[in-house]
Image (cartoon, rainbow, N blue to C red; front, side, top):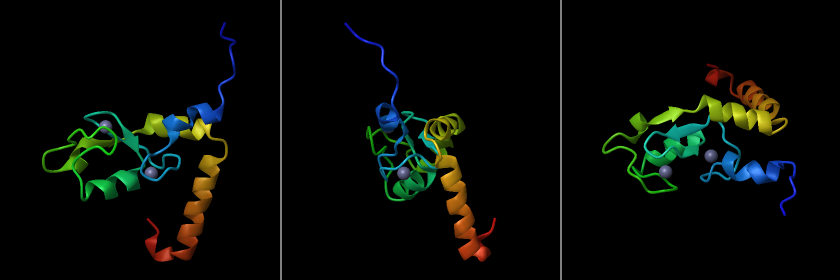
Amino acid sequence: MHRPRRLKITDLNPHLICVLCGGYYVDATTIIECLHSFCKACIVRYLETNKYCPICDVQVHKTRPLQNIRSDKTLQDIVYKLVPGLFQKEMRCRREFYAKHPEAQP
Ligand SMILES: [Zn+2]
Ligand SMILES: [Zn+2]
């Protein structure tokens, strides 16, 4: 017998966490080839020296891996919806960053 139970955030965490940094996705970005997702900063940095997916080892692209990744807005929305306070925290981090580095203002 299976009793229905409420979904806990800890059950969902494995789907919301980037394997490269161990944190929640920031600017979730998905490899088109295998649909694995990472933070944008994490996967871009990783692909500077690798052409294979960190999870399943599929070749992202023969020569230019960055051409085969896409921002995953849907996934990012889910992360923000499911992780209370993450969006606010993120925005605060950005504000603090730009307050300290006004020259980096977009
Ligand atoms: Zn990451
Ligand atoms: Zn993969």
